[in-house]
Length: 41
Image (cartoon, rainbow, N blue to C red; front, side, top):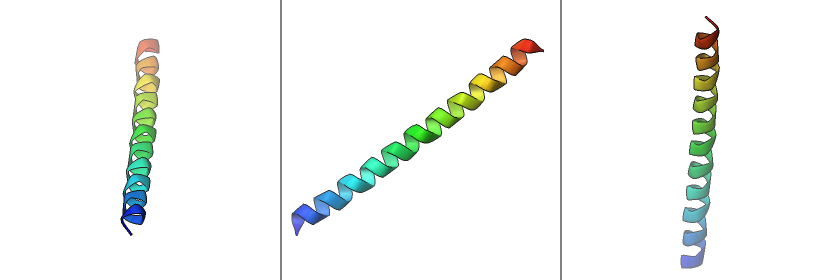
């Protein structure tokens, strides 16, 4: 029973970490795009 709980906790952590890294990548891409636009202007 404990093995299942540990597995669930780990899968939840993996998902939240993956989601966070995706969000961070998206934000940094937006920031880079905004920086390029500002540089052109």
